[in-house]
Image (cartoon, rainbow, N blue to C red):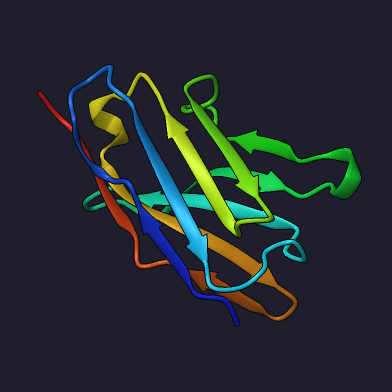
Length: 119
């Protein structure tokens, strides 16, 4: 099992930045994909970004179109953390952001952290 705890959410003005962090309760080095999802009020949860561990060749990343170029996902396998740097935030980025991990036969979600983009 792995417990995921997100932090770093808050209120930010349009155009601002936030950095979300996800701390795992155990090593994530064996977890190939770590992901961020989000859920806006009244909407379904949607995938935001994935960072895939490539071992010695490093990690690869993938993003939904609406955040590509503004958000950056990264992982630190030594400290068991995953981060999401969010720049040029817009009101439509307002949502609860969730950290996600999947292992063989199990999926894990954090409790979420609220991001509100408003002037």
